[in-house]
Image (cartoon, rainbow, N blue to C red; front, top):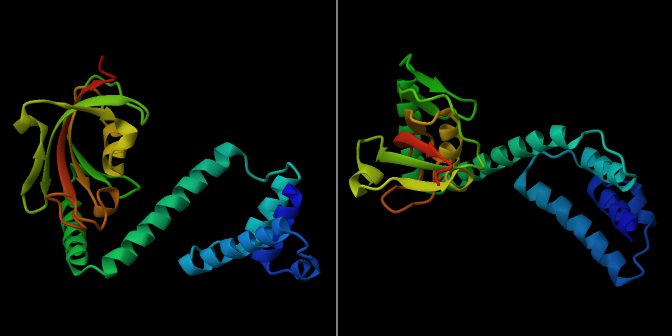
Length: 230
């Protein structure tokens, strides 16, 4: 049944003549064909740019316990593809939201201006940061818990959150916050203080979040107090 499903799915996705020779004799046969058909239509509608023939070959290889990529090679590719897919989704949502679109444009201009500052660094994702104070050299991993003090502002200087004002640092798992924080804090070492400039796609995207308007670029002054506090 497993190989039959894979065969039907490959035929449906690649559009090869093999699908014409398949007889749908049972409910499972028809459901398998319907799933392959739905996958292909979903890819088309979302304009993912996936080559259906290559994806079909991967299904055939998997059915034969073969693969042209190992897990270490495939995982970063899938991560990159997922991020690109999310970015395009956000752009589509922003095109329908005038407020988000305006904030995105203002944020892009702001990020372009601060790029002229030699003390501001930029990562591949578009995150920018500036080092205020160095720490002891110990960096957190995405799976660690961290304790931080921080102040968050918009690019117009409006403060929207601050653990300092509350008088209590925040502790959280690093992989359960916005992508800009997950990436940015891994650049820091324990005891350091950085300013993170987070574009909308690494923040809250095109949705409002409390006092943060849709499409906002965020600025956080963050001090990494402790990694995996007891």
